[in-house]
Image (cartoon, rainbow over all chains, first blue to last red; front, side, top):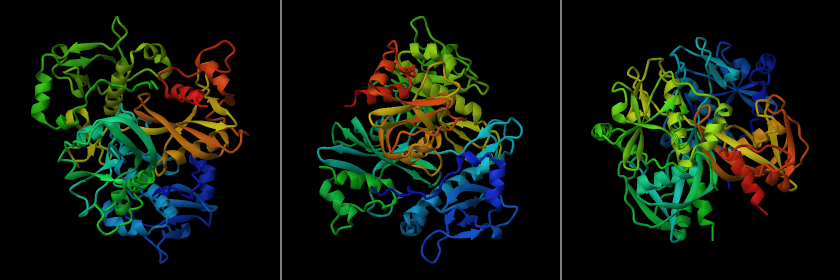
Length: 288
Length: 288
């Protein structure tokens, strides 16, 4: 299974993040690279991959986060407190064109830069915090609280009944697009409980068994961890929450295969290949 | 599989959290209950379960979060900005004695109260935020940012090789205790990638395949989502990170079964039944 935003070639140097000597060495390495971003968005080179600059071309005053080692070269990204990015739909073409490893690097970098931009002040006491651990932590100079980058776990799931799965569309989707249902996991829930709650809230169907399939880091609009599941449900009568879903429908394997192949007459437009909903639909279409 | 902190009987009322009339109705319901806590810790009743008070006995000025409906009664918890709790090891006896549904209710309540206590100020602009959505959000009156309760995804895993699994102990563990290895999932990682990275960093073993087994919400020291996996690794030679692990060892199924049964001569003291490491070891011991 190829899964979007996975397969990063970066070797994360967790153990060197608090090592001042190692950091100085990486920062002074003439081979070191800095990822170029347009706000939070990727800048592609002529070959369609990410763009990098030698660290010597980078503003010496820039606050840099150490992404890790990329083919023996230290790789950084600048932490710009006012960085903003385009929404996912506006990045469709560039994301669809990015090579997999580059998409994974960009996803991690975007998540980190965006987190810093939105977490400059201490949640406990309101004081401006300082970047520590090579960009992987912010420390409060007043109360000494350490704040670490945040990733929100999200369930994304196909309800399954009688050989068909449930796909739905949100009002903001492009015309014809349907996808798996999804929702944030709340405090105090397991993956399986969140899947069951979301399916009941959004579609009125009751999960009887939940099977985990795969996971994906998803960088938009913030860092999320997508946990993709298939849930057997006890009936196919839908009660939709129209604040979440404009429409939903059951689709059989042939319909899913047609959608994934963008075949003429397909019952819906499938999510893009870099979305784990696509992976999940492809996985399910290959079963039995 | 019985999994600690799951199986909450609370019906979360997500769709009523922003509904002022529904909230006023729940708050005015004479059957409504408020969970009693000692800081963040549970207060058990004479039967060993959680303690509740009628809402009429609650300070009318208290800021309450709506946990959900509990057997047709609205259930709240007070948001106390200075709430602190004991560490996990100090709560061992009370957690081991709490009935499963009560542990799940307490876990969600603790996670929510603790999050509010540690996220009173806006990360974007440093201004004091206000509780909204019945306690499930904080809004910044200055920049209008909405902040939602945070849950950190964590991988916890058994490396497996030649019919044995790897268990390790941290210096802070009680004498004899070993458990599965664990670590936070970082921005830009999948579950499977985080498992492989942590196993290599902490024990020097290389994962060749990762299998998800189960998940659990874990409330200490903050709200975490534990994602339990078994990872096949390509060798059993260990290179331990002694900052993380004091010791680690390979154990076969008989050893794991003895540990889970607290049998005399067991090779280690198993984690408590409410920890998903226990569930994971039991699941593995039952395979093949």
